[in-house]
Image (tube, rainbow, N blue to C red):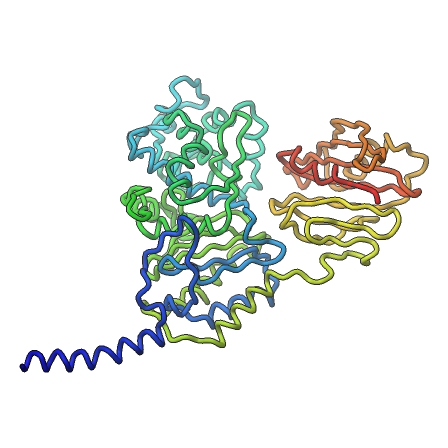
Length: 539
């Protein structure tokens, strides 16, 4: 009877507590391990022990300071608590992740070792290239291992990072064989001695994956990493030799970047399947060597003294993993020099402190609503779209630029492109695509008695001389626009802000006694960007 009576008292005690938990902690029974193969589970921050107020404060700071951030995603306990996109970038768009690609390459090396394609990180690099005659050979180069490449301590005199304005990168791109170029580099230090960030060695990692697995790196990553995680929308540039570019040039959606972070947070496990060996996750994210940008470097992952590690890409791409807070945070952006560290500062000041409890917090309707409103405001375009001079001179909105003043014309541009200031006489608009390719439209008086066929190779090419050097006209041909108007398409190679080698495509036409011309300035993938200027149509 006494035992029964005790059970009654226990039940009377537990029931009210359970009711309190359900009312004040509505997701208290939610699993901390959620695997979003088919899509993310969305909860409020409080349901995952985070403070909405601090995340709202961060969103307000980003808006107030107009930081060039495109998205912020915060995942705790496998649940998405913040999914914010800043106009014109949207949830459905892929983003160029730049050197975050390197961390994905690291995962592929770990998988290839586990599957037996590669012996170990101690395997000499020259073992993978027995058929190549390699220049500048010495004992140091012979001793260079896979681990040396992974931790950016190859010893090669690379000089292809931002510290050298990517000088070596452009030299490699101009070479006949990119892998041969990297392997031929002279040695500056013994391997494993000092950190020297080198894009070329990450390219070699992709070459090694392709050589050892007999698969394209893209196919290998799809089969062994992306497909199990439900990542299907990917674009990856290749070299002229058909090698997927291991240091960058990969495009993913931010929510898929977050999946990579969650995979690593869970020790390489996804549901019931071990995707990346747990031992490789631990080794990759441990600081092996003192580094430059952040405290230490692992195997193509950066390690911070603030107890987190990260994949890091040019102009503000980050995948932060904070193990002791069960946090994954993704930033994408277009941050100029001097503002690159802003995501890390926001992490330390707002996001990590917001993760205040390992249990759910009481609901906070006011701050949750404020956060929701800030997220909606960030994603909303102004009613007028992007206007440079007047609405009649032209307005860009929803992927279309229209000019209402004579000569009237329109053209299309990639979603997610951002407004840039006009910098030249006659420019009615100027924008930049999500991958930092500039394009513009201009309306000027017809230059003297210059025929349309001479506008591109003579007038525009001469104008480029004022902005750069080594201007060379590669092609100039007559085309017919979709509206039936005669135009010329001119292709010009030139060097801007040495050593950036651009190939500009100019489409020009004479209409209503004015010269109308559109220009785009890519470094790669000329045909893809040519479609912007070739969509010119007169109304």
